Image (cartoon, rainbow, N blue to C red; front, side, top):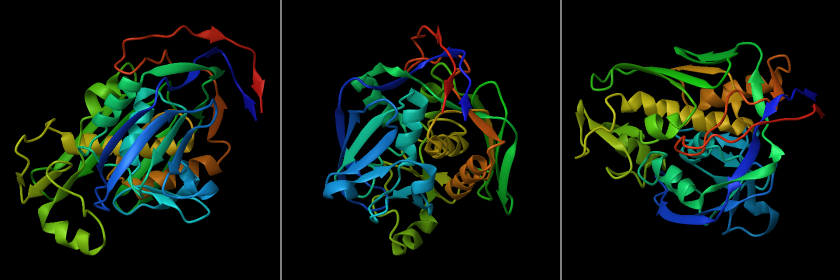
Length: 317
């Protein structure tokens, strides 16, 4: 496959390691997690420190996803899993982190406050460093769409990455909401990252009987009882529900293995349909290509820094 190169940017990893501790929203278990620098072209790799040998390593890719009920779970060939990775992946994507080693001593990423904002904060504290390898992008060449019932997920060509989402709930407190974002210059951090996951009090007991939401609380999710928001602080955004769905999609799409140049549109889509879309896209070689041509100057976390771009010769692979 030929990779077209024009004005390029370079891969990034963390300058320093950083750690946190939190509860898994579904397992209810306390997990210690560390984010560490990684070599160029290594991507996002999870490592279970409570598992020995090569069985501890789980690459974060669309084809290692094994479970999509209420969250995104990845699994390696040894049956070792890590669940609820989508909020962290969204933060990595929105912050421009290409390569990172994520070590954790349990089966689930800490939920923190139910959004990506704590992970963005960790990345900012660790700082980013540019690496001596061009950043590759997946450029969408033609529309690819998948559907299930009234839900659809679509990727179509575009000059940069945009995410639009629409939800429609019978619950009147949520109702029909839509949003659209151009993912550039700090948009993820400023407009999306603080949107929290949400659920309904009436469904809590059923979820727990399924082994889910054991660690869920008002500290890490928006909880609705009928049309009432039970969280004392209320909502962070008037349309926080649909913004969180967009956040989930950004995390799920980062499992493609590289940033996407194109337009994503989700209508009532969830983790399963987002993953199905990646499988459909990457199975169709006419629908995408790899490129090191940046769609625009990519900013540092927060959107304050615009790195110099350089011309380079074509790369073949």
